[in-house]
Image (cartoon, rainbow, N blue to C red; front, side):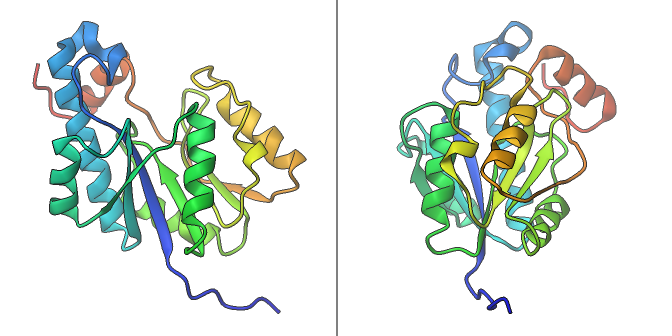
Length: 211
């Protein structure tokens, strides 16, 4: 018989500081450094709206640290707690954040800020999946994934993945299988990383053009 876990479910939002030239760099040729940073701020706020709208406890994990004024404004506006991401590659930082958050949560869902069509229901669906599985993934259409959730996680599942390779999902699946973790996948979603992604988001009406 499974004992009911009364601890809350958490959503972790991973975000970089909106410093011109250091975020959304693949969009700089299309939007310029300042325009790319402005878009990044919009995406962070959009993601926080979705996370808070899910009804789950939401935390904002910041890189390179939480000192940027934008993060302080997000804390005031959304009532989220700020954390600093640890050093290392993306897999190291994700594994650390998941493990730390699981100390006082029944499950943790980690998302970035690049998914233009991630909504509150996706997060609620992920939380529901964690009632039955160790891990939940939501694939991105570029071969990565926009969401990973866990109620238990083996660090090896995220370390050694070749990030930004288009093979992140395949490699993570293989590592989860080797770690003997059961996982569930949600319907795929779109990231906004490239000029083509930006044009598609504007054309679909999901993003207002400000260029």
